Length: 470
Image (cartoon, rainbow, N blue to C red):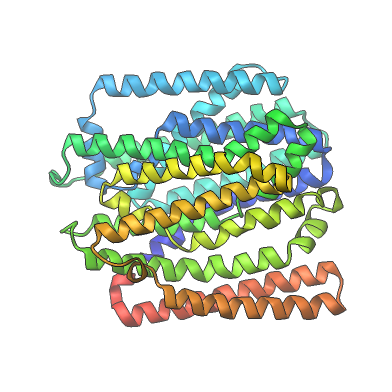
C-alpha cells in the first residue's frame, strides 16, 4: 500500500511544487492588487470545478479497475449527455466571472475550465489503473512548462491574458496524453463482472460523494471568496497567502487515503472490520509522522517563514496563519476513507453540512472579536467538530470504540516528542542566529524528524503486519 501512496504523491508533487514557487515569486515581485487578481482566477477554478465534477474523481478511486470499466460501459448516452451539459453550464459561469476580473477573451477561461475538469477525471482513472509512470512523466513536464511560462510573465515578455492562453495550450497537451492513455488502458482491462454493488448503490454513493466534494471545496474556498467580495485585492492577497493549503500535505493525505481505499476495495468481504481498522491504524500512524512535526514547525517558525520567504510585505498574514495552521494536526487521519468504502455517503454529507453550518455561524462573531484571524479560526473549529462526528459514526459502524479506531497512544507520544524537539531547536537558534538561518535549521530539523519517524513506523508496521503493509 505504501509504495502506491508514494507514487500517487509524486504524481501530484511536481505541479504543486511549481504552483508553490509561482506563489512565492508572484508574492515577492507583483503588487498585492495584481497578485490578488491572479489568485482569484484559481480560487474560482477550484471551487467551480468541484461543482462541475460532482465527485467523479473521488468515486472513481473507490472501485477496482475492472469495475470502473464495467461502470463506464453501463452508463447510457443520456448520462454522458447530462454530465457534459452540466460541465458546459458551469464552465460558462466560470468564464463570465474570470473574464470580468481579467481582461481576457471569454473562450479562454471557458476552455481552460473544461480542460482542467476533464484532466482530473483522466488522472483518477489512470491512478486506479496504476499507470503511475505515465502520470509522473506528464506532470513533471507540465510543472516545468508551468514554471517557465510564469517566469516569462515576471520578466515582462508576456501579459497576464497571454499567460492564460499559453496555460490553456499546456493543459490541453496534458489532457491529450492522459485522456488517450486512460481510454486505451480501459480497453485492455479484462475482468469478471463485479456484482457487489447495485446501480442504486452506485448512484447513491455518487450523489453523496458529489455533494460532499462540493461541500469540501466550498468550505475550503468560501472564506477566500467572501474576502474577495468584501475587501480589496490587496487584502485578498494577504488573506490568501495566510490560509493557502499547506503545500504537499493534501497530496500526502490524498495519496495515502487513495491507497487505503484501493486496498479496502480488494477485501473479499467488505464486512471485514478487523482488516479495515488495521488499515485505519496504518494510515493514522504514517500520516501523523508528517502532520505533527509539520504543525509544530509551521506554528513556531511562522514569523521567519513569512518575513524571509515572502518579505515583510506580508507580515499582516502572520496572525491569520497562526490561526489557520491549527488545521494541520487533523491531517494525521483520513476521516472519511472507511465511510466511503462502506458506502455511508449520508453520514459523510451530514458531517460536511455540520462543518459548513458551524463555520458560517462562527465566522462573523469571531471576525468581530479577532478580525481576519477570526474568520480563519472559524473554519478550524468547524473542522474539529466535523472530525469528531466522523470518528464517532465510523466507530459505531465498525462496532468498536473511538479510542480503538484511532492510534491514540502513538499520537500522544509523537506530540510530546515533536513539541519538545521543535520548541528547544527554535529557542536556541532564535537566540543566536539570523531569521534566515533559524528558518533553514527548522526546515532541516523537520525533514530529519519526518524521515526518521516514517522510517521507524514503516519498520514497525512491516514487523507487525508483514506484507499486508506493502
